[in-house]
Length: 268
Image (cartoon, rainbow, N blue to C red; front, side):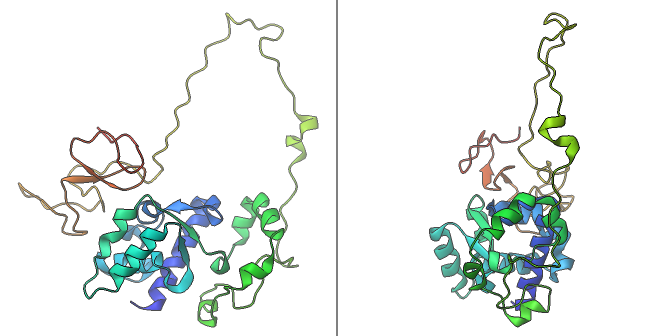
């Protein structure tokens, strides 16, 4: 596995996080979110520079194992298991699915915060500026990573830089002095005439957890062959009698009502 593939995978992950889930720049996310929502194989294989699903899985488990120092896996047992698997002569590259619900985070030393991300995260900027920069620069990336736009070795990512735009102060229109409050049940409104509030339904499954189309693999969304019996997907090799959990990506058997990893109710 080329180091360039790992670097492109890491760069694609950062770009997706900055665009879609900027809070993940400093907070953990699950392994499942990487291969299901943020950088799935079917939409990012050209961006990463791979042709086969096996190459994608190999790159992912190497990132999770800590190669290159780009990602930090929060579970020590999961980290040992993945590293041990990589040391075998024929590693099971799909081992990451066994740890779909495990938290992982970006290594801050390799994090290149874009201007757009900083504009969206003013609170994050203040928090990072208050931290000791020495701890962050101790793991600074190599010169090879700098060629791809990743911060060079020895650079303080969170120092006061004249070129870095500071977040603008909150708009005056949103200040507390200009906010008007309407008391509940105020003049001219009675409880009897006030329409009932509709219950708010929160979708916790995420934007990328839509059920697969009929005749498609539940794991990689690729169309399945038109045959009477299809036990395994020809694209990702997953067992078609199992389905992924919509929340954490763990394997669910037919008839299960809830996920054994995170407790999310299975799709009916």
